Length: 260
Image (cartoon, rainbow, N blue to C red; front, side, top):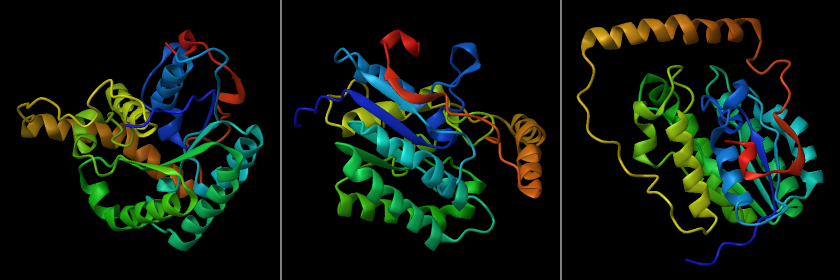
């Protein structure tokens, strides 16, 4: 493996996946894979700077308009861009528009950083994945093309069977747990050329599946706490990220203890 390049600044772009839901940190702020990766990079040298512009619920058009220009102006060593999945998971989706905006974003970000990282996002086993699998795979195939054309690294989380394990997903069935985010951070770390610290694709230990009654209770709890509010937002045109600002909007120094 080639020696990983020294990275002194990192900007993360995207939606709830990159914001860090549902990896709960101190003070009610989500941590997530990007913060975990930033901690590791900061530990490699002094003067490391980090910004996280991701906001939950953002569509690719919003990411392209609100986050990409800011990130390009920061001229960081490393930029990660993960977006488009919120568009894909909506009943109506113009895949041509989604891919076009993603490509425009990549074209703007590539010359503004030393290394751009894209991802094939993970998918949880279940009916949502099966319903939207064709769109997701079309999006991820396009991400692969963008990586090849523009020299971006692509981290394949979708192809990792372990990350589809429901035990690595939170109760809302849309976001990874803390352990899931840890594995994503390790996957990006290795893709950047760093030696492995963990086997992020290692399967979880075997476990006896919960019984029928336990599963039905979980389904009812999910429908009441998460599905119904999600449907309500779709019907009213609202987003979970309305009115929220990025948790780290400036490319500022980061000490390892900043994201415990």
